[in-house]
Image (cartoon, rainbow, N blue to C red; front, side, top):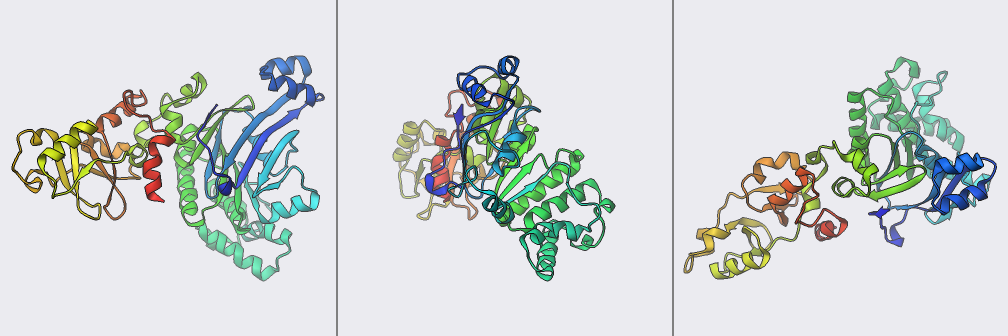
Length: 418
């Protein structure tokens, strides 16, 4: 298993350690066989037991969207229900802010579900005999909140999903997409620290589904919740996930960022999922950026030429004292430039991109054949990207001859952004 999800101990919101869930009469023998690497089918044939979740471990940082993706029967829905013990784990530990969920008694578990965890289901799970507002208030009512206060919080949650005007109508009057927004509002109303989402958008039409993904990402920008999201759709996983785990037969076969999953599939199973992915929409410039070799206007052409040769680049960015780019020096222009000032040699029109831009937006800039400046929100230079690396990634070879977009490759830029 590839692990792109290393989180420092001080930042672990969710920790799952060696989790198993066995359905059947012989859990110990099933776990022993699963730990020995026997297949799910063979174990079932000989024990009539199934390890729906088999030795799964992962960590999630606060404010991260962690996506578990797999086909039907892979164990992903069982896994997420183990986290709040809607399904009882057979073995392993589940730590939320250091508290072991598996060891909690009934009262502590109720308190956890009421105050820290929310869950959004695939099929809305709304009460048809209650109004939209009453559905959203339900978790607050269970918590014992007074009617006036819970009504206020419910209206606030409905406003977050654009449905405040529908508070007093029955949910059957709403479209499927609107009903799912009510389910999301119900989860938000209790101010959860952790949101569990089990294929919440899979029953929706494609256009409505994309709108709901946009809605979730917009809410996450505001609320910074920790979200565990289950899906069978890789495009959805790539679009919303900070980290993705690919699950098969109860196990994680690969964990990593969207870029890592697409650029370097761990095996043929993962490769089959990623084969038809539009890489131009997965990779962002910030993930590909490396620290850019630069010069200042006071340097001389010989220094600039030596720096180009040392870093094997086709051009250098000229920056001021505060790190803002003034232009680019093309290597071929420096060959016979002795005695000339760099200000006279640099080209003020240079290819540039924001760190969050998708590659699909930058084909024209890449075609110029010069290093692309990656800029922060103020226009300061964060790094640069070789256009050949972009084309290699789009060709599907993971950037052969270049460093792949791994955690190591993105570390210099990530450190500068913090």
